[in-house]
Structures are given as structure tokens and as C-alpha cells.
Amino acid sequence: MQIMSNPTHDEIKKAAKALKNGQLVAFPTETVYGLGADATNEEAVSRIYSVKGRPTDHPLIVHISSINQLDKWAMDIKDYAIKLAKEFWPGPMTLILKRSELAKDFITGGQENVGLRVPSQPVALELLKEFEKIGGQGVAAPSANRFGAVSPTNIEAVVEEVGSYLGSGDLILDGGQCVVGIESTIIDCTKDSPAILRPGAITSKMVEITIRNEVLLSVEKNEVRASGLLDSHYSPKAKVLLGTVAEPGDGFIALAGVATPNGVIRLASPQNIEEFARVFYRALRTGDQKGLKRITIFQPEGEGLAVAIRDRLSKAAAGK
Ligand code: TXA
Ligand code: MG
Image 1 (tube, rainbow, N blue to C red):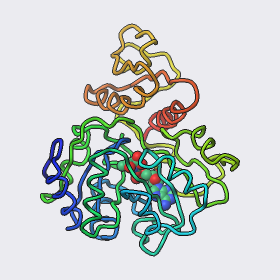
Image 2: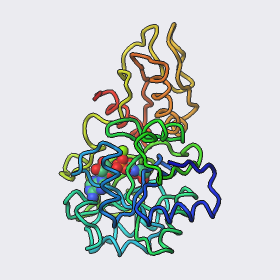
Image 3: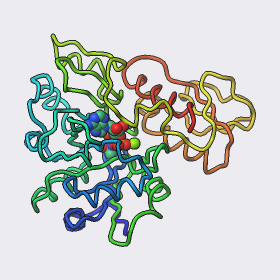
Image 4: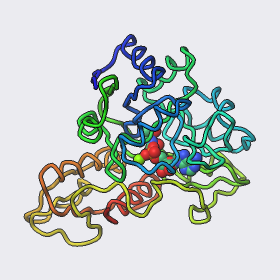
């Protein structure tokens, strides 16, 4: 496995070729790092599952370079889904759409729909464009962590998670710290009305404003399978505690305005909700590196991105 830091155009072209040749390429996105493979290559995609240790019936998101690639992978696309794609792509949003012929069972987990996303991170976009120039159709990429573990938001975390499972021809592109820090908002667009399956930086308010007179359904009504929807996910080794009093020796994560309780090890003091999202996966990792048994977290209140943060925190707290 080779790491390319701040990859040049030529290095990104090389990575696109590696994907085309069936290798795995871990790459930065604005949300979290992804572990990419050619989404039409069954053998390459099966390596994603073995590197992650992930059950094979969990579908993968296909990453494309622009809305113009949408029709390759999806069909019968609802008008509201086009509105959302135009408004929020490139960006931290995944749309679940009725699949085309191209989206095989090994991508969708046998479901009749496919998840698609156009990321905005410049290295990711350039990689996707170069991949398409040499005949690629799309890059399947889950978060670059072992199944159930915390998503990586920087290169050290990627190496820690999957480095030892990658082969000699595989690559890791280093694009620095991910700016959003939590996974994309997933929106089911297969029904008459959209439903948010996983909250993220594209908030329900933003969706509602964009779809105007359409109704946004709640998550519970949906039976689509998504591993991020398991009650327990995104878990560090330490026990995560929410809404309890921190004890001496605990790791502690809270907004900067919250005072540090006596004897705890403060792992992060984000100034605002955006910074909270950006740093808390890294803070959970730091807690594990310090060998802490417990991490107590003071959850941010309010709507918008705070909803997505509380979603991930409650799953981290549910343990493995
Ligand atoms: O921000 C993100 O979405 C990152 C970056 C790398 O793009 N990717 C990511 O992938 O979080 P992953 O596989 O770790 O989580 C994607 C979630 C999974 O829970 C998966 O089950 C769900 O999306 N998903 C993918 N395709 C789906 C489909 N066709 N129907 C329902 N859920 C789907
Ligand atoms: Mg994941």
C-alpha cells in the first residue's frame, strides 16, 4: 500500500488507473474518508467487504463526478430528487434511487435501489473525473473504517483502520482533515415523498426548503437497509456515556462553553456545532489511544447539524 500526500494531478491520474485495474484507493471526501473500488468490478468490490470486515448484504454508495452521470446508475428519478441533486451536489448528500442495469446486486446488496453521491472534496472530484475519462462509471466507497468502528476523518485514522488490510497495489490519497467530519445525509428518493435515512450536514430544514410543497417523511416509516441505521455503530473501544456526570479519569467531550469537570481528560472543546462535527470522531480515537475506559460526552442541543451529531453519538453509546 502506498500513501500519496497532497496528491498532484499526475498522482491522482495514477490512482484513477489503479481503480480501473481493480485496486482499492482510499480517498478524502468532505464528510469522511472513503475506501474506493470500481463500482462495476465485482472482484474489486468484494475486496472492500473483506478489508472492512463488513457483511456483504450491506449496500455501498456509488460516487460519481456530476449530476450528468446520474442516469447511468438510476432510473425513474422523481422531480424532487433532481431538485435536491441540483441544489446540494457536489456535497455531503447521498440519494437513494431506483437502480439501473449498471447497479448490480454486489453494489446494492440485492435491493432494487442504489445510493449515489457527488462529493465536493477537490481530490475526490478530480479522482472521479479522471476515472471517468478512462472509461470508469463510478466509484463504490464506504467509509474507510472496519465494520462498526469510528469513521476516519484524517490520514492517520485511515491507516490505523485499514492500512494493514490493504494490498501492495492499493493506494491511500491524503487530502488532510475532512471539513464536515460526519457521513453524508442519506435521503430515500424512491417513494412519492423523500425520507431522511441518516441525518447529516444537509439538514431536514435545507431539504424542506428545496422540495417546497413536498412532505419530508420521517425515518421510522422506512424499511430500507442501511448499516449506519443499526442501533450500534460508529463505536470506539471506550464506553461512550451520554447525559451522565463525568467521573475522574473519564475522557470528556463538550462544547468549549461547558466547563471541564474535575479530574477528567478533556478530548475536545469545539467552539460551535460545525467544529463539534469536524472533531468528535478524532476525539473518540484519541480517547482509545490513551486507553481510556469511558468517554463522557455532553451532547450539543438544537436542530440542524446537532441532530446528526446526536444520531452518531447515540449509536456510539450503544456500543458494539
Ligand atoms: O459520507 C459518506 O456517505 C461516506 C463517504 C465516503 O461518501 N460514505 C459512507 O458509506 O458513509 P458507508 O457505506 O459507510 O455508509 C453508507 C450507508 C450504509 O449504511 C449503507 O447501508 C447505506 O448508506 N446505503 C448505501 N446504499 C444504499 C441503498 N441502496 N439503500 C439503502 N441504504 C444504502
Ligand atoms: Mg460507514
